[in-house]
Amino acid sequence: MPLTAFSRSLDPHRPLAGHAAPSIATPNPVFGPSLEPNAGRRPEPHPTSRQVLHDLNNQLMIVVGLADLCLETLPEGSAERQHLEMMVKAGGNAVQIVNAESRRLREQAQGR
Image (cartoon, rainbow, N blue to C red; front, top):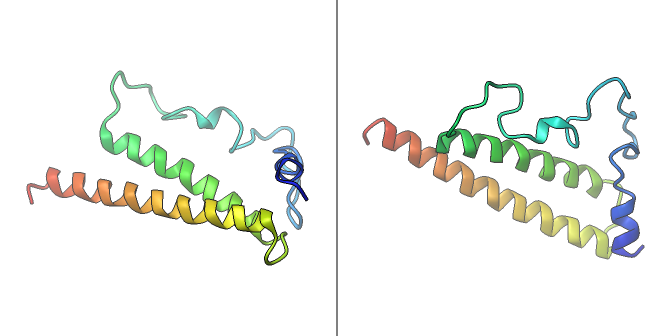
C-alpha cells in the first residue's frame, strides 16, 4: 500500500483494528482542543521551561503510542511498517532528550 493510502487510513474518526470507535460526544484527545498547550489549565503569560517540556512530552507520547498501535496492524518488512518503526524510534529519542532536559532543570533548581 503506498504511504499516501496508508496515511489516509489513519483517519482520526476511523477506529484502529481491534479498537472501539471514539464516542461522538467525547472530545477526541488526539485531534481535539487538548492539543493546545496547557489545555485545561489557567493560561500563563510565560510558561516555564519545565511546563513546555511536560507538554511536549505529553504530545510525543501520543505520537509514539499511536504509531506503536499502528505497527500491530502492518506486516513485517512492509515499507509502511519500516516508516512507522523509524517514527517510533525518532519519537523515543525525542522523549529521551526531553527527559534529560527535564532532569537537568530539576537538578539545577535543587542547586546540584
